[in-house]
Amino acid sequence: MSARPVVSFSGATLAIGDRVLWRDLDLDVRPGEFVAVLGPNGSGKTTLLRTILGQLPLTGGSLQVDGRLGYVPQQHAGDSDAMALRGRDLVGFGVDGTSWGIGLRGWRTRAARVDDAVAQVGAQSFVDKPIGLLSGGEQQRLRVAQALTNDPDVLLCDEPLSSLDLRNQRTVVDLLDARRRAAGTAILFVTHEINPVLPFVDRVLYLVDGHFRVGTVDEVMNSATLSELYGSRIDVAEVGGRLVVIGGDGEHHNCQEHPYLVDGDPTQVIAR
Ligand SMILES: Nc1ncnc2c1ncn2[C@@H]1O[C@H](COP(=O)(O)OP(=O)(O)OP(=O)(O)O)[C@@H](O)[C@H]1O
Image 1 (spheres, rainbow, N blue to C red):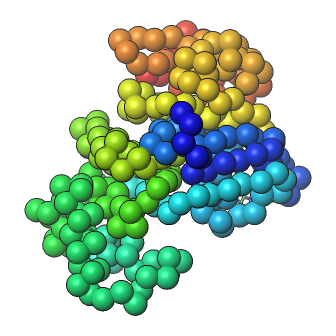
Image 2: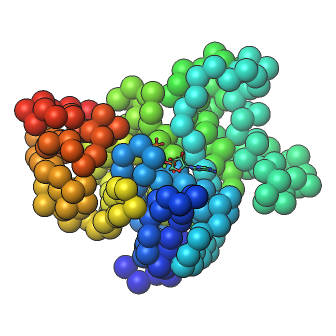
């Protein structure tokens, strides 16, 4: 891959107070690349996205972003405006986002961009319903559409599959994959669970307690690398095309914070 990176961290460090979330991170993300960002709770995955969004300055090193950003959040139940807002309104927020300075564009252009994004996620049949009447999967498709209204070069996805069933997970992942293939949009995908995106992942960034590894799935998701990263024995096995990570003694990390790892019980396996 030789195209210019759309996101480039160089010697990047982020500390909050006296706690270093990650140190000396070098990562170039290229057009069309799918990078999964993994790690236990509190390891700094969301914070990484926030630095790219310009919401948090690095405490060391540099970060360059070359292109438009789109952001896909988690699916949240119980939005207070869920019955007042239609799906189309939700998607339209992407066009109206003040940070991009496009609020003055004409309504016709706005409507066309919303329609185009809605078509990209195949949401025409439910886009005019109140959000509160839509399923979690339908709502999440609209959030992807909202991110696409900006014609993004980079999609920042923060656990976009959480609380979706397997079928809807697959739908959302397929939409993201289609976008990167059609438009060369790079995807940074924060997740606790690599299996739903395993076929699409080019590289993994795995963060643990200030340390990290970057590489292909094979390079990072193996027993030796994760054991070194966690500082305790971790076993990684492939079962039926899925990766299962089994925690060891649990002394050096809190396994309960990691969906794969079962604290203190090396015989127990959680496969999701
Ligand atoms: N603005 C802030 N002020 C103080 N602490 C913060 C701030 N932002 C993040 N943190 C802390 O930084 C750590 C990393 O948070 P972050 O949300 O990036 O973790 P994460 O890896 O995404 O976790 P999770 O898997 O639970 O979503 C957490 O301990 C969090 O409390």
